[in-house]
Length: 68
Image (cartoon, rainbow, N blue to C red; front, top):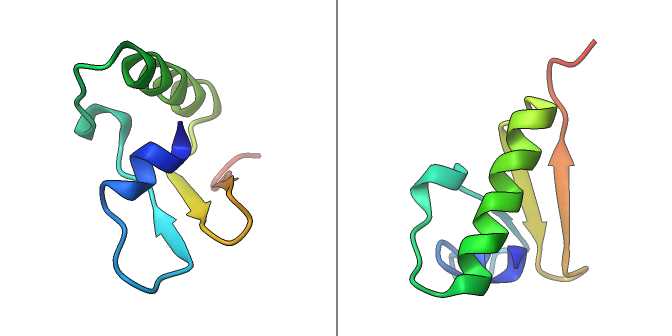
């Protein structure tokens, strides 16, 4: 799912793509909607507002900023 979200804003040649806020993503596909709901729950639970997708590792990295 992070791949689909990152693909919407990817710039050519970049290795990392910062994901937008969950509310900024819209989709009619059930799988994508479910992924956005999970992403929203993750941001709500952690307070993290910056998630980065690494195209080379195909792995999403959340930077948990400001947590004690």
